[in-house]
Length: 271
Image (cartoon, rainbow, N blue to C red; front, side, top):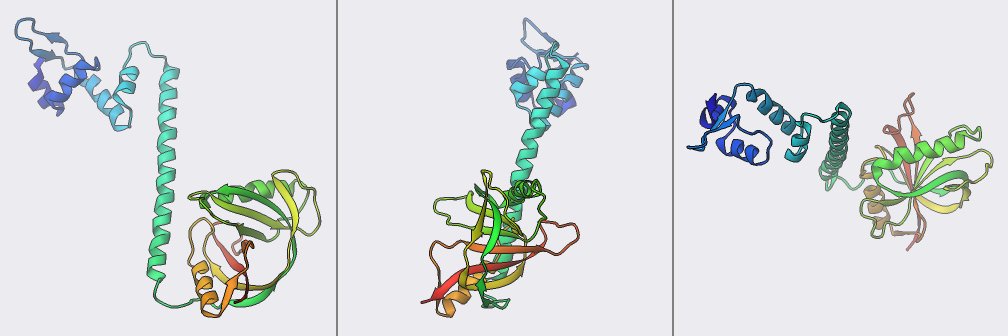
C-alpha cells in the first residue's frame, strides 16, 4: 500500500483533493492507521481515481460521479446520465456557435461602418399587392429557417409550389432576442387559412426604397443600415406601422436558406 503523499505523487492529484474525495465518500482510503491516522491507498484504487477524473473531465458533478461510481447502479441509468450530459453539451455548443456567428457579423459591420455611404444602389419602386401564406411568431434570427420549414410544409400540403419567400420585420419593442417576425410564401392561388398559418393579400405600397444585397437572414446585415442612411440623406421617412419587407431568391441549386440574394423593401414617403 501507499501513503497518501505517495499516492498523490503517483496519481498527480493533490493530497487536499484526495482528502476531499474521502470526505465525500467518493474515494475512501483502503486503510487508515488507527494510531497515526495516516491514510493508505492500494494500486487498484488508481483505476478508481482515473475513472473519477475521467467523469470530471466530461463535466459531471462530484455528486453525479459518486452516483456513477456506485456498485449497483443499473446500466440503463448510466446510459441515461450520459445522454443527459450529451444533450447539455450540445445545447451549450449551439448557443456558443450562435454567439460566434453574431460576433463575426458584428465584426463585418465594424469593418463596414464609416467606409462609404452606400455600397449598393437604392432604387425607388412601387410595391405590388401579393397573395401570400404567412406565419408570424416572436423568434430569434436563428429560428427563421425553422419558421420557413413549418410554413413550407403547410403550403405544400395544399399542392402549392414554393415560390418567392418573404420576411416581414414588424416592430421590436422590448423584444430583446425574440423579434416579431413574419415569414411568407407568395401564392399563385388562394388556399385555406389554418392557424397559425394565415393566407392574406399584402397591400400595395405606393413608394418603397429597395436595395438588393447578399447575406443570410440568420445574422445581422448592414444592408438595412445602407437603406436607412439613404432615406435620411434624401428627404424621406418610413411609413408608420408598415413592416420592412425582405424578399429572398435562392441562387443555388440546393435552395440553401443560408445563401440567397435578397431585396430589402421599406415603405417610405416624402418628409
